[in-house]
Image 1 (cartoon, helix red, strand yellow):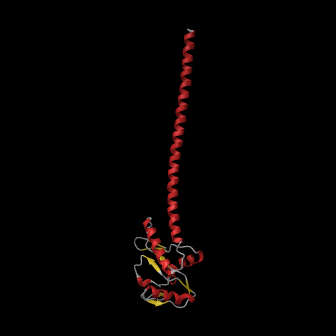
Image 2: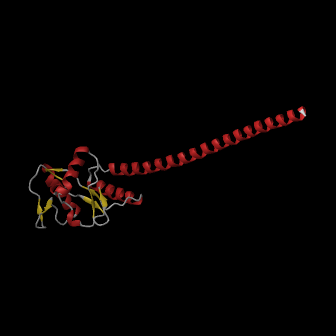
Image 3: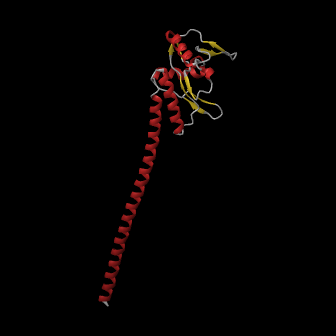
Length: 193
């Protein structure tokens, strides 16, 4: 009877030890699988964030290239950058070249507008009476030189800093040397840089 009893206890202990070992082995496999799944998800998330950041870094680099003051190169760069931004899914209303023109440079700028074929090649402002008039002498102007798309040729030379709605952004771009998001326009609320 004792021997039978000892055998049963031994079998029971062996069963408990085996069950514990199997449980530990399965738990270890589950941890390895859970860690691998976690690593896979983290890697996928990291890759997504990296790709998104790379996309926007590329777009910002394209915008920041817009510092060559040569008119023909600038218009080509504005057009190319606007195309790139739109091809990357940026809902862009317009990308504009609005250089800072000091009063001493005004005549040369207006001559440049004449050569570009602007119908009214002067730096001008829109009055409250809704007419265009030449801008009065000022220390500096921020006239529209080019826009992509160029939907209204009549607005070339428009001094955007004369209007309070644009002035703050023009001065920020001047002071920082960085492109600025001016405002959201129209019913689609698309950005203008």
